[in-house]
Length: 347
Image (cartoon, rainbow, N blue to C red; front, top):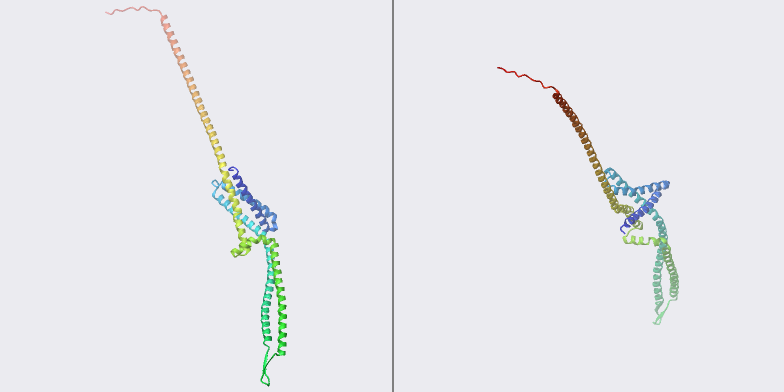
């Protein structure tokens, strides 16, 4: 697992970088749709160069100059911003289609809601008028019950009777009021049915719509934070951007860090091997130099010995010559006759 883990991290970083590059490239191509193919080629090369530059910076951080280091870091940062901008454009463009469908659905719901409110207002007006009619019916019924006329005749008796004209008027008004109330009942039922139909249409529109199912969690979050759906979606897109391409770069650097000890070990082994070979070569060279010095000394000694031998031979020859000369002289002396010398006596 220890050997496989660096490759897993490297695969994850390359996968994230590839997906980020895909989103970024197509996002930038939509921003510059007039030259989409050229923008795709340019952005693709920049994405690959960004990954190579990040790896190079991590591996050669101590060996490169400050000016080159500053430029490469700045270039990687700018490319990350460009990638994030492309991803933002891609995701916003993808959300726009959903947003249009959502707005279309909301407009339909708003129209239905407006109709429902109108029906509810009419139903409330009918209810209020119906209550007023019920009061009138009660008053008219009470009026019919109290339609009594009392008067005293000529004999002094109190006569109780009803007014036919008043009764006809009250009955007519009562019939008209009851008829109007019944019509209002019918209208109220119709409005209630209309409101129920509108509720069913709104519910069916929300259930059958795929957009409602897709945006439902976002709408719930938007309601909880008291923000619009567009703003909450924008927050989510920014969070995606913050952890997308930067995470890919960080994982790539981490993979390089995990592969680095192995490289350093091989480098150390190579350095040790080179050092051993260099030491052996140095010893061979030193030994060769020593042999050369000894050969030179031997040659010098040989030359000195030859000179000494030649000198000794020369001295020996001279000594032999002298001995020979001395021998000859002695021999010559021996060969000379002996002369008698007279002795003179001096008196």
